[in-house]
Image 1 (cartoon, rainbow, N blue to C red):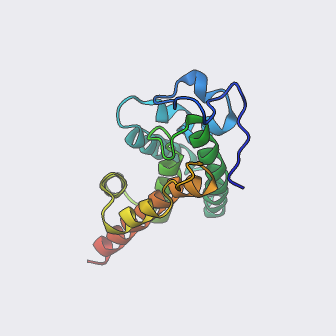
Image 2: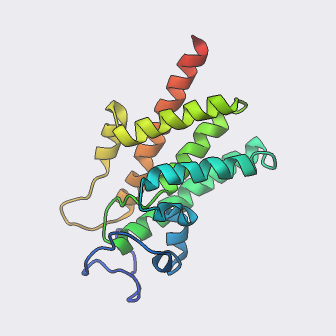
Amino acid sequence: MNDIPVSPTLQPLGRAPVRRPTWRFMFRHPAHVIALGFGSGLSPVAPGTVGTLWAWLAFIVLQPVLSDLHWAALIGLGTLVGWWACTVTARHMAVADPGSIVWDEVIAFWLVLWLVTPTSLWGQCVAFALFRFFDAVKPGPVAWADARFKLRRDGQIGWRQGFGILFDDLVAALCTLLVLAAWRWL
């Protein structure tokens, strides 16, 4: 189950890892386009933050036309497709959790925004800052989640690591939501 076929034209495990993916790399496989956040993960500076900003912009554009049911389906399917895309892209890059993979930020921040809506622009800014804090600093439960799916001794990047890429960001989203709920309660 950990073996994902790698095309010879892509970055296989026996070669040096792709450190900074390019547009060319992104368009070599549909999984790369998704995992790299439609190009937002190609940012040379703070790709996780850029990916989260892309998620925020996409949410603002999609919010008026998607119902709660649509958002639930988009986030659910996006998580499953993202698991595949993150796994394939990490394998092709030969890096277990590359910073340029930002689909995890996209899905997690969509979840935050969907669950705090309706809220003001100020509320969205606070949600953004909290989410970035939890994702970047990884305090407590986020660090625990990040450590759960690290690369195994055999060195194979597989489904476990692909899920791990998503999991710590989902825990960061949960922590963000808990802080926002406590803030509203007080």
